[in-house]
Image 1 (cartoon, helix red, strand yellow):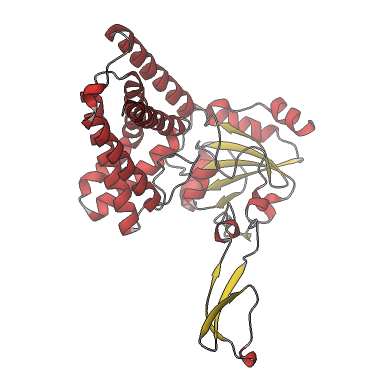
Image 2 (cartoon, helix red, strand yellow):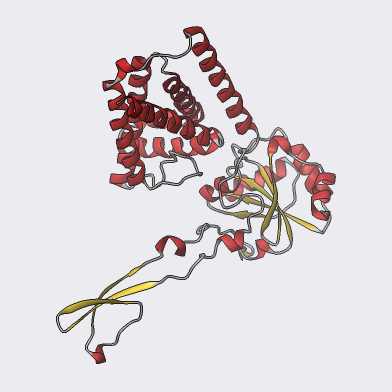
Length: 367
């Protein structure tokens, strides 16, 4: 049984570390997901959860760090009784979230592995049940696990894991994710991602002379076939990566297609009332220095009056267009955030803390 003990222990520890790392890559994404859960819970259970929304980032970061540190502790076989019980409580919490999402169809993507490996709520729930079984097995076999390093060395490793996790998380929060798994990443062509990779392929079911048969072609009733039903055999490949990108304003109407023409500098602002304004002077200068070669526009989910006040406050005179807040948050994890596009292809993205100057923008355009 020892070989099974090792396999289960390394699998559980490794997967918790992996789960934590992919979320640590994008803490803003975890914050958004926690906000979704708190908003749902405040409606379905108690308004108390509404007060947790401002702390979504802190709670998300704590959960991420717990996953990584407990995963490392499992690999080290350090204090296995406390580590496994802590992991058990953590996975029970996750199981409740994923079951609630799946059964009540509330939050359609739990974000268990961030955007790296999207899972449906039922897939996430199944994963959590598997974890409960594996952790239960480790608890049963707990006496067979002995730490193979000294307590002092284990504490040093766990402390280093905690400090490194905090550092990487803070860096990702104040810049952009290390790896962008969204369909708006640098190099992606947004209009291409709005087109399905494949056309649907159908298999039809018919009945003739009391027998059922399947066909890729639609068989006509004149030849004695009775239609029963059909299914799409390549369902997953018929869904575009982007299904909800749509921008507009009152003056020009739908501007979605036009936003892909030529060189565009998008300034993405989720909400003008809460947007980070510390670097707005630099952004305003950049926009002022842009020639006619690059067209700057603002994408926002703000109310029109709030956006007008924001432009006036920061002495900006550029058009703004409305978009869905969820889409804007997927496009860039910064508000304001800057994206440079050429005919719909994302050339580069900047967090507000990394606002470029005009020379950097022109160098990118020329290259």
